[in-house]
Length: 326
Image (cartoon, rainbow, N blue to C red; front, side):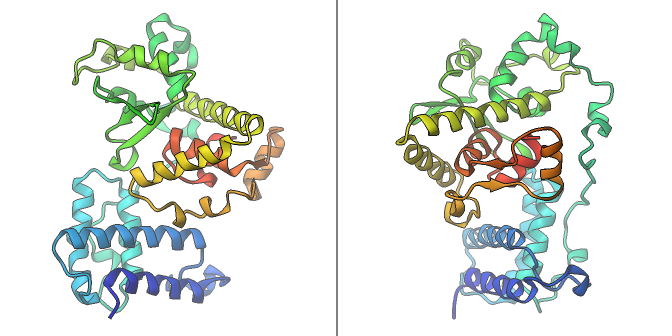
């Protein structure tokens, strides 16, 4: 008998084969998987769950019923680890799909309710109301603005930065975000050109000293705009280097694969990593939006993944384009 991980993944592949090409309205009970992206997401969740039950001392050849009994405890552990409601919901949905016939029902599982974020409406978000970039010109916030332009973190991530959160890996500087989005640790690469500036912020700090004071963080600066502009700038830099040096492609690819390894992810399972020789071409409303703005609608996928992996921690080209290239 195959181990539980392979059995669950086989179940998910079967649901995808049945749901592939089927209109969702033809599947009102959401019995099948209709999207390859959803399939890859669920396979990754099964992989994480399988590693967890192995760490709990449960045999990998256990039955589906035995695995299903562990799901509530697994989800509670995700919540305690600070994972977002959306992340926990996705894990619950994947395991319900992967363990059919075991009595797992989403409504009965311990997962926090997700909140609806404003769609394409950052101006409508409460956190951005009355926000003005006038503060960006205030000398009081110059340190923060200069840092944000070349690092591109989220607001809470700046607030939580400490003196210990700078490291060097293979000759590159990285800012460590101990609790990024979803409670995950992420390594934000600093471009070699900008490294001396960022390193100066950490000089003389003790391990637990904050990089930015509470006063510096009390502002109405649109830090997400700076994050988006930083992503666009890094895409231009990677693209220019790839065009100028034919050998850089191999080097960058190795570095991205190593980043996947450090994060405990298998790059072979990433749809974008399997299609690096194919440009990322925008479609639908994203293409329309970019067309209207006079922006590019096709992107070098390797440069795009470098931005997504090293500077945004999204690990996906589509999220990078939709949220940061527009």
